[in-house]
Image 1: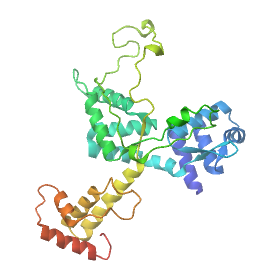
Image 2: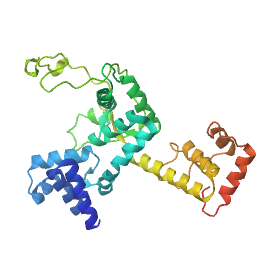
Image 3: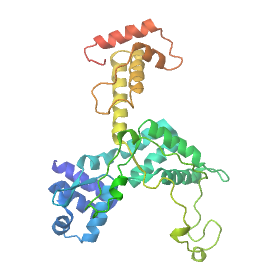
Image 4: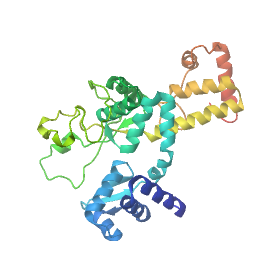
Length: 323
Protein backbone atom coordinates (compact mmCIF):
# COMPACT_ATOMS: atom_id res chain seq x y z
CA UNK A 1 0.00 0.00 0.00
CA UNK A 2 1.40 3.41 -0.94
CA UNK A 3 2.07 6.15 1.60
CA UNK A 4 -0.63 8.28 -0.02
CA UNK A 5 -3.20 5.50 0.46
CA UNK A 6 -2.15 5.00 4.09
CA UNK A 7 -2.51 8.74 4.70
CA UNK A 8 -5.95 8.70 3.10
CA UNK A 9 -7.00 5.74 5.28
CA UNK A 10 -5.74 7.65 8.32
CA UNK A 11 -7.81 10.72 7.45
CA UNK A 12 -10.94 8.65 6.77
CA UNK A 13 -10.68 6.72 10.04
CA UNK A 14 -10.07 9.88 12.04
CA UNK A 15 -12.96 11.72 10.44
CA UNK A 16 -15.44 8.90 11.01
CA UNK A 17 -14.29 7.35 14.30
CA UNK A 18 -11.78 9.60 16.08
CA UNK A 19 -8.09 9.50 17.00
CA UNK A 20 -7.88 6.22 18.95
CA UNK A 21 -9.60 4.14 16.27
CA UNK A 22 -7.46 5.88 13.64
CA UNK A 23 -4.27 5.03 15.55
CA UNK A 24 -5.17 1.33 15.87
CA UNK A 25 -6.42 1.07 12.28
CA UNK A 26 -3.35 2.70 10.73
CA UNK A 27 -1.05 0.57 12.90
CA UNK A 28 -2.67 -2.59 11.52
CA UNK A 29 -2.49 -1.23 7.97
CA UNK A 30 1.25 -0.65 8.36
CA UNK A 31 2.17 -3.85 10.23
CA UNK A 32 -0.28 -6.47 9.01
CA UNK A 33 -2.06 -8.93 11.32
CA UNK A 34 -1.21 -8.72 15.02
CA UNK A 35 -2.64 -10.03 18.33
CA UNK A 36 -4.32 -7.77 20.85
CA UNK A 37 -1.48 -7.38 23.35
CA UNK A 38 1.09 -6.63 20.66
CA UNK A 39 -1.17 -3.91 19.25
CA UNK A 40 -1.55 -2.36 22.70
CA UNK A 41 2.23 -2.52 23.37
CA UNK A 42 3.30 -1.14 19.97
CA UNK A 43 0.81 1.73 19.98
CA UNK A 44 1.20 2.61 23.67
CA UNK A 45 -2.55 2.27 24.13
CA UNK A 46 -4.36 0.59 27.02
CA UNK A 47 -5.90 -2.82 26.42
CA UNK A 48 -9.36 -1.44 27.14
CA UNK A 49 -9.00 1.27 24.51
CA UNK A 50 -7.61 -1.17 21.96
CA UNK A 51 -10.53 -3.55 22.56
CA UNK A 52 -13.05 -0.75 22.05
CA UNK A 53 -11.29 0.45 18.90
CA UNK A 54 -11.19 -3.07 17.48
CA UNK A 55 -14.89 -3.51 18.27
CA UNK A 56 -15.67 -0.42 16.19
CA UNK A 57 -13.44 -1.55 13.32
CA UNK A 58 -14.86 -5.09 13.29
CA UNK A 59 -18.42 -3.74 13.51
CA UNK A 60 -17.81 -1.73 10.33
CA UNK A 61 -15.99 -4.57 8.51
CA UNK A 62 -12.75 -2.59 8.49
CA UNK A 63 -10.84 -5.23 10.46
CA UNK A 64 -11.09 -9.02 10.33
CA UNK A 65 -9.75 -11.56 12.81
CA UNK A 66 -8.41 -15.09 12.60
CA UNK A 67 -7.78 -17.71 15.28
CA UNK A 68 -4.46 -19.50 14.82
CA UNK A 69 -3.68 -23.05 15.89
CA UNK A 70 -1.99 -21.81 19.05
CA UNK A 71 -5.26 -20.20 20.08
CA UNK A 72 -4.01 -16.68 19.44
CA UNK A 73 -6.43 -14.25 17.80
CA UNK A 74 -4.84 -11.91 15.27
CA UNK A 75 -6.47 -8.83 13.77
CA UNK A 76 -5.92 -7.58 10.24
CA UNK A 77 -7.01 -4.31 8.62
CA UNK A 78 -9.11 -4.43 5.45
CA UNK A 79 -7.44 -1.57 3.59
CA UNK A 80 -9.67 -1.68 0.52
CA UNK A 81 -12.74 -1.51 2.71
CA UNK A 82 -11.41 1.60 4.47
CA UNK A 83 -10.89 3.31 1.11
CA UNK A 84 -14.45 2.43 0.08
CA UNK A 85 -15.67 4.84 2.74
CA UNK A 86 -15.00 7.53 0.14
CA UNK A 87 -17.87 6.09 -1.88
CA UNK A 88 -20.45 6.09 0.93
CA UNK A 89 -22.17 9.24 -0.41
CA UNK A 90 -22.42 7.63 -3.85
CA UNK A 91 -23.90 4.41 -2.42
CA UNK A 92 -26.49 6.44 -0.54
CA UNK A 93 -27.37 8.63 -3.53
CA UNK A 94 -27.70 5.57 -5.80
CA UNK A 95 -30.18 4.00 -3.39
CA UNK A 96 -32.15 7.25 -3.32
CA UNK A 97 -32.50 7.24 -7.11
CA UNK A 98 -33.57 3.57 -7.12
CA UNK A 99 -35.69 3.32 -3.96
CA UNK A 100 -36.55 6.93 -2.98
CA UNK A 101 -35.91 8.50 0.42
CA UNK A 102 -36.81 5.33 2.34
CA UNK A 103 -34.18 3.23 0.59
CA UNK A 104 -31.66 6.03 0.96
CA UNK A 105 -32.07 6.16 4.74
CA UNK A 106 -31.98 2.36 5.09
CA UNK A 107 -28.58 2.16 3.41
CA UNK A 108 -27.36 5.26 5.25
CA UNK A 109 -28.23 3.70 8.62
CA UNK A 110 -26.42 0.47 7.70
CA UNK A 111 -23.33 2.38 6.58
CA UNK A 112 -23.35 4.57 9.69
CA UNK A 113 -23.77 1.63 12.08
CA UNK A 114 -21.93 -1.12 10.21
CA UNK A 115 -24.43 -3.84 11.12
CA UNK A 116 -28.02 -3.63 12.36
CA UNK A 117 -31.06 -5.87 12.71
CA UNK A 118 -33.88 -5.26 10.27
CA UNK A 119 -36.25 -4.25 13.07
CA UNK A 120 -33.77 -1.63 14.33
CA UNK A 121 -33.29 -0.22 10.82
CA UNK A 122 -37.03 -0.02 10.19
CA UNK A 123 -37.69 1.86 13.44
CA UNK A 124 -34.78 4.28 12.95
CA UNK A 125 -35.79 5.07 9.37
CA UNK A 126 -39.48 5.42 10.21
CA UNK A 127 -38.60 7.90 12.97
CA UNK A 128 -36.33 9.91 10.67
CA UNK A 129 -38.92 10.06 7.90
CA UNK A 130 -41.64 11.06 10.37
CA UNK A 131 -39.44 13.98 11.49
CA UNK A 132 -39.54 15.39 7.95
CA UNK A 133 -43.29 14.98 7.47
CA UNK A 134 -46.01 17.46 8.23
CA UNK A 135 -47.53 17.50 11.71
CA UNK A 136 -50.08 14.74 12.11
CA UNK A 137 -48.45 12.50 9.49
CA UNK A 138 -46.23 9.52 10.32
CA UNK A 139 -44.31 6.84 8.43
CA UNK A 140 -45.67 3.32 8.86
CA UNK A 141 -43.21 0.55 9.77
CA UNK A 142 -44.76 -1.69 7.10
CA UNK A 143 -43.85 0.74 4.31
CA UNK A 144 -40.21 0.85 5.44
CA UNK A 145 -40.18 -2.95 5.77
CA UNK A 146 -41.39 -3.32 2.18
CA UNK A 147 -38.52 -1.17 0.91
CA UNK A 148 -36.05 -3.18 3.01
CA UNK A 149 -37.38 -6.40 1.43
CA UNK A 150 -36.92 -4.90 -2.06
CA UNK A 151 -33.31 -3.99 -1.23
CA UNK A 152 -32.68 -7.55 -0.03
CA UNK A 153 -34.37 -9.04 -3.11
CA UNK A 154 -32.03 -7.03 -5.36
CA UNK A 155 -29.05 -7.83 -3.10
CA UNK A 156 -28.19 -4.25 -2.11
CA UNK A 157 -28.35 -5.36 1.52
CA UNK A 158 -27.32 -8.76 2.84
CA UNK A 159 -27.18 -10.75 6.04
CA UNK A 160 -24.01 -10.76 8.12
CA UNK A 161 -22.29 -14.03 9.08
CA UNK A 162 -23.30 -15.24 12.54
CA UNK A 163 -22.28 -17.78 15.16
CA UNK A 164 -23.79 -21.19 14.31
CA UNK A 165 -26.15 -22.64 16.91
CA UNK A 166 -24.04 -25.80 17.24
CA UNK A 167 -21.13 -23.68 18.44
CA UNK A 168 -23.27 -22.12 21.18
CA UNK A 169 -24.40 -25.53 22.44
CA UNK A 170 -20.89 -26.98 22.66
CA UNK A 171 -20.32 -27.96 26.32
CA UNK A 172 -16.54 -27.56 26.03
CA UNK A 173 -14.56 -24.41 26.78
CA UNK A 174 -15.48 -21.44 24.55
CA UNK A 175 -13.14 -20.72 21.62
CA UNK A 176 -10.89 -17.64 21.88
CA UNK A 177 -13.04 -16.01 19.18
CA UNK A 178 -16.32 -17.07 17.55
CA UNK A 179 -16.36 -18.55 14.06
CA UNK A 180 -18.89 -16.69 11.93
CA UNK A 181 -20.60 -18.49 9.06
CA UNK A 182 -23.36 -17.71 6.58
CA UNK A 183 -25.27 -20.04 4.29
CA UNK A 184 -25.20 -18.55 0.81
CA UNK A 185 -28.88 -19.30 0.20
CA UNK A 186 -29.79 -17.38 3.38
CA UNK A 187 -27.76 -14.24 2.61
CA UNK A 188 -30.80 -12.38 1.25
CA UNK A 189 -33.54 -14.19 3.17
CA UNK A 190 -35.61 -11.62 5.05
CA UNK A 191 -37.09 -12.87 8.35
CA UNK A 192 -40.88 -12.80 8.57
CA UNK A 193 -41.54 -9.94 10.95
CA UNK A 194 -44.81 -8.35 11.95
CA UNK A 195 -43.54 -4.86 12.64
CA UNK A 196 -46.61 -2.89 13.65
CA UNK A 197 -46.27 0.77 14.44
CA UNK A 198 -45.39 4.19 13.13
CA UNK A 199 -42.43 6.51 13.33
CA UNK A 200 -42.19 8.85 16.32
CA UNK A 201 -41.05 12.44 16.49
CA UNK A 202 -38.29 13.36 18.89
CA UNK A 203 -39.36 15.37 21.88
CA UNK A 204 -37.39 18.11 23.61
CA UNK A 205 -34.41 16.88 25.60
CA UNK A 206 -36.07 17.47 28.96
CA UNK A 207 -39.46 15.90 28.26
CA UNK A 208 -40.61 12.49 27.15
CA UNK A 209 -43.48 11.55 24.87
CA UNK A 210 -45.98 12.08 27.70
CA UNK A 211 -44.65 15.54 28.48
CA UNK A 212 -43.16 14.49 31.82
CA UNK A 213 -39.62 15.47 32.85
CA UNK A 214 -37.06 12.78 32.19
CA UNK A 215 -36.03 12.61 35.83
CA UNK A 216 -39.52 11.42 36.81
CA UNK A 217 -39.77 8.65 34.25
CA UNK A 218 -39.92 5.17 35.80
CA UNK A 219 -36.98 2.90 35.28
CA UNK A 220 -37.68 -0.33 33.49
CA UNK A 221 -35.78 -3.53 34.00
CA UNK A 222 -34.64 -5.69 31.14
CA UNK A 223 -37.23 -8.26 32.21
CA UNK A 224 -40.01 -5.91 31.11
CA UNK A 225 -38.59 -5.33 27.64
CA UNK A 226 -40.17 -7.11 24.73
CA UNK A 227 -37.90 -9.61 23.00
CA UNK A 228 -36.37 -8.43 19.74
CA UNK A 229 -38.19 -10.37 16.97
CA UNK A 230 -35.09 -10.80 14.81
CA UNK A 231 -32.42 -10.87 17.50
CA UNK A 232 -29.11 -12.15 16.15
CA UNK A 233 -29.95 -11.57 12.47
CA UNK A 234 -27.82 -8.61 11.39
CA UNK A 235 -27.68 -6.88 8.02
CA UNK A 236 -25.08 -4.82 6.17
CA UNK A 237 -24.86 -2.91 2.91
CA UNK A 238 -23.58 -5.10 0.05
CA UNK A 239 -20.90 -2.84 -1.43
CA UNK A 240 -20.00 -5.31 -4.19
CA UNK A 241 -23.57 -5.09 -5.45
CA UNK A 242 -23.29 -1.31 -5.70
CA UNK A 243 -20.05 -1.67 -7.66
CA UNK A 244 -21.78 -4.12 -9.99
CA UNK A 245 -24.53 -1.53 -10.53
CA UNK A 246 -21.95 1.19 -11.32
CA UNK A 247 -20.19 -1.16 -13.74
CA UNK A 248 -23.45 -2.02 -15.51
CA UNK A 249 -24.28 1.66 -15.88
CA UNK A 250 -20.87 2.27 -17.46
CA UNK A 251 -21.38 -0.63 -19.89
CA UNK A 252 -24.81 0.64 -20.96
CA UNK A 253 -23.42 4.15 -21.48
CA UNK A 254 -20.49 2.79 -23.52
CA UNK A 255 -22.81 0.77 -25.79
CA UNK A 256 -25.03 3.81 -26.33
CA UNK A 257 -22.03 5.93 -27.35
CA UNK A 258 -20.61 3.24 -29.63
CA UNK A 259 -23.84 2.06 -31.29
CA UNK A 260 -27.24 3.55 -30.47
CA UNK A 261 -29.92 3.84 -27.79
CA UNK A 262 -31.71 0.64 -28.81
CA UNK A 263 -28.53 -1.41 -28.44
CA UNK A 264 -27.90 0.06 -25.01
CA UNK A 265 -31.46 -0.73 -23.92
CA UNK A 266 -31.02 -4.35 -25.00
CA UNK A 267 -27.76 -4.60 -23.04
CA UNK A 268 -29.41 -2.91 -20.05
CA UNK A 269 -32.19 -5.51 -20.16
CA UNK A 270 -29.69 -8.37 -20.28
CA UNK A 271 -27.75 -6.97 -17.34
CA UNK A 272 -30.92 -6.38 -15.34
CA UNK A 273 -32.11 -9.95 -15.98
CA UNK A 274 -28.91 -11.43 -14.59
CA UNK A 275 -28.02 -8.88 -11.90
CA UNK A 276 -28.86 -11.17 -8.98
CA UNK A 277 -28.00 -14.48 -10.63
CA UNK A 278 -24.48 -13.54 -11.69
CA UNK A 279 -21.58 -12.87 -9.34
CA UNK A 280 -20.47 -9.24 -9.25
CA UNK A 281 -16.95 -10.36 -10.23
CA UNK A 282 -18.04 -12.70 -13.06
CA UNK A 283 -16.70 -11.76 -16.53
CA UNK A 284 -19.96 -12.82 -18.21
CA UNK A 285 -23.65 -12.88 -17.34
CA UNK A 286 -25.69 -16.07 -17.27
CA UNK A 287 -26.65 -17.29 -20.79
CA UNK A 288 -29.89 -15.68 -21.98
CA UNK A 289 -32.01 -16.66 -24.97
CA UNK A 290 -33.31 -14.08 -27.42
CA UNK A 291 -36.87 -15.04 -26.48
CA UNK A 292 -36.18 -14.30 -22.81
CA UNK A 293 -34.63 -10.96 -23.70
CA UNK A 294 -37.54 -10.07 -25.98
CA UNK A 295 -40.09 -10.79 -23.22
CA UNK A 296 -38.07 -8.74 -20.71
CA UNK A 297 -37.69 -5.58 -22.79
CA UNK A 298 -39.34 -2.52 -21.17
CA UNK A 299 -43.04 -2.09 -21.80
CA UNK A 300 -43.61 0.20 -24.75
CA UNK A 301 -40.25 -0.52 -26.36
CA UNK A 302 -41.63 -1.34 -29.78
CA UNK A 303 -39.17 -3.49 -31.69
CA UNK A 304 -39.99 -6.80 -33.31
CA UNK A 305 -38.34 -10.11 -32.48
CA UNK A 306 -36.62 -10.02 -35.87
CA UNK A 307 -35.12 -6.58 -35.18
CA UNK A 308 -33.97 -7.75 -31.75
CA UNK A 309 -32.15 -10.72 -33.31
CA UNK A 310 -30.43 -8.36 -35.74
CA UNK A 311 -29.25 -6.17 -32.87
CA UNK A 312 -28.02 -9.21 -30.95
CA UNK A 313 -26.04 -10.28 -34.02
CA UNK A 314 -24.48 -6.81 -34.28
CA UNK A 315 -23.55 -6.88 -30.60
CA UNK A 316 -22.06 -10.36 -30.95
CA UNK A 317 -20.02 -9.37 -34.00
CA UNK A 318 -18.76 -6.10 -32.53
CA UNK A 319 -14.99 -6.29 -31.86
CA UNK A 320 -15.45 -4.71 -28.42
CA UNK A 321 -17.11 -7.97 -27.35
CA UNK A 322 -20.22 -6.74 -25.54
CA UNK A 323 -21.88 -10.08 -26.14
